[in-house]
Length: 284
Image (cartoon, rainbow, N blue to C red):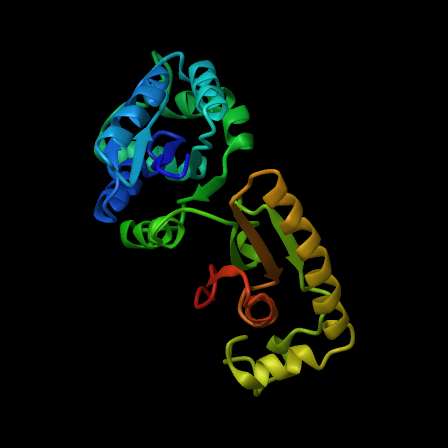
């Protein structure tokens, strides 16, 4: 089955960025189909194989009314043929989605006679199971078009989508937990460099802050223990066929401790496919 092209299913909340995500894949040379009925996914894969396409993607969403059950059936059908599609679920916060629909002056596809928010809530209920089964849940609330394209290139920019990719993202708890996190590590047990005057303006990327954080009681033990747990978890995810894992590393503001620890974890997992990003760095 090695000649079968990679297939990505783009789904998720209306207004969360499926068009931008699809365009990003097109820029990478993927063949993309919009609003494909789920039942046609096997047919699309057959055609792509005959045309020798390296990668194909389909936007499958609530415009296909029975898609929630049809999509599950189509994914099972592909699995029976030895093909495991990569399911990308795009997410965004309710206020962000409302604002996006208002900006383009379009109704939500599920609002009916109600409000945009009514449509969003109905869609969330419909998609809950699909979201739980997705390979990637990507929150686009704080991403602009260029940042979303960069994330897509990070996920799918290689020659093929194979193996497990780990995205480590630092964040500040005061700005909220990343909704797309699979695992969360809390660094708030360590002393905060914010209260050290000469370190306050620096970030966890700077050597003085890094050295301060790593010198604190419990920091080396935390790194060693969490790396051991992470190896067990990642091995389990790989056995279960999960190919994208997001580890969120948090502290109060997302500037010092979480940044330093995220960088350290990535450095010590150098043998794996790891990317690092800092969601809240520079936000204060």
